[in-house]
Image: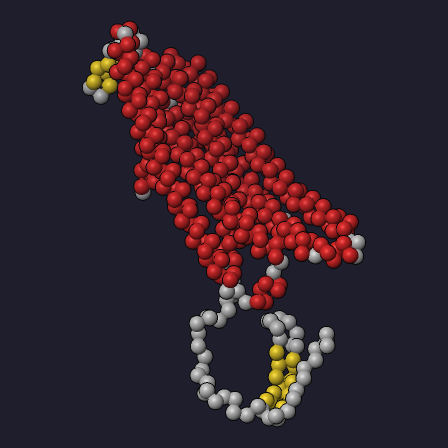
Length: 369
């Protein structure tokens, strides 16, 4: 509720500055009454200008303070969330069983702790902050236009419906393309790590060309995924700007044709056209940041999945107590022992049975000798 209050207060003060400028311009030759307070006309000299300027400065400073505190609030909350998720992921990975590190590519781990962590620390906090700001701008634009000229509802409703239809169409592929872009980075980082660690072997067997071709192929796939994501963003941007231009055109035509009926002053007409033009930017800003935030949320999905890894047994867990004299004899016996390295793998030991008497020597030879 605190953030909501700061957003509402910021937009009220911001609109108040523009509304005050419109009153200021209309009071060129006649005095103006606002909230029971009379302000002299501008023709009275610098003293009259100072009265208007003082109110304008008060509104501007109050709006700036609200914007400053809500930004600090949002960023600090994002940092706390990022630290908690990162710490949780780190703890789960450090306590993961060895089989996880044997079966997971190193590039995937590097991707989670570098690229996804950067998305979580910077991009997601910025995107969510911009999304809230864009939402407040959109709501303010709609309210201002409807209050000044209620007939704008006839334009805003169908245009907003077209905006939503375009956005929902974009959502069908936007988040998935962002996910593909992130996934395509893991093989690049894994291959880079492999090439650095095995550079001596690569030079020995003269496989430089093979590794270069493989790396270029992976780089092409990663670039293709990124370009597809950027392409659909521009597809959305062009259509948003086109619909915004239609809103400005309709607002101007309503003012020109029906101004005799509406009887709007010059200041209110200027506010209507200014916020109509700003509506395009606000809605474009809203949809772009909603799409970007939705794409950035995929980093949380991957980090959350990493924070649910299977864990080794508790390091502090103590098993059954064993007598200090154990083993009293060196006798060892296996009876029909079956063992596999991890679930869903074939048995490495299948029905192994043997007995080693106390004092005997036993050697184990694997396939490598």
